[in-house]
Length: 441
Image (tube, rainbow, N blue to C red; front, side, top):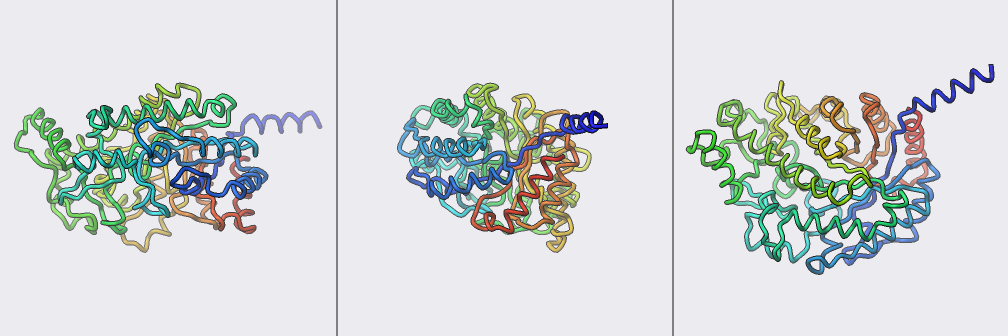
């Protein structure tokens, strides 16, 4: 009988999926001048988190901090220090190559711009940023137009990202080699997500559909060449009848009344989304060349759940996800991720349809999460995050249900984020119970 019980226990261990639970660090854990903000408090928190079952931490490695003083003048010492604290506590580390600005998005509580020497070049030629039809431009992230233009003291944006990652890998080699640094998530857009900046908080409010970001001479020229190649040189512009950032509902404007289903609309949306995927592929290719198989790679997709239940999926379309009924906007992304060995990281796992119903914006976060999981299955491993800070058990229950939906392909959940509220005894106990549940899956 004892042998049978032992055998069943061993079988249960063997069948466990070993989903990791990590904790995202504060955005300002490293100060703008490159110091760890609270070394003593951080070390204490790490040991408490480890005792509660946490597997690892995730932190942003800000371009605007680590290369702020000039081209190729790298300083990752603060991140080395944090990696040492994590190792001492028995925690692993996920590092995010944050090539975007902190500030201007939901949840941003600090201001970390791109390096000033990068901004000087881009501000002199604003078409290196993403631009909308009203001549607005966004300084969160360089557009894909900058990927191949050697205007940054002789380097392209892709070369700057590559050099940065090589320097990071070199300075962090100790932590890569000893297994502390286990994953590098590469940031390909605003908020570190593969998307266009279609809903900046200084121009947009929920649940607006957002705005296409396809203007500026370089993107316009690329679109016009694409349209001409299709035999339509008269298609000289992206849609000008697609409303604005705060258009609500989508059906109130011509493009989303049916224009998006026209030959022109399909061509534009195909180009707009494919160029975004191409950009993600180019950035991941650089990361793969740097890190090889020494760490896992990942890239994040935004959880744009508003208007998901509307036939237009307008908010997803303006962000670059060509997702419609009968046509997945996420499977091509997952396929590309798989080609580079990158995990598909997705947000909003804590949200339910019922909680979002009051917005009257056809919000369907649960269905969106399930679709992305279905699309990633068989193509690339899946990871998840919560989009907004939550400390209640109902949110954790929703996350657990999401993980279990495609458990065999789910590798890690990262909780957003470490703060004083999370470390309060009641909230910490709830987190620890959640971690225990996930580890038993």
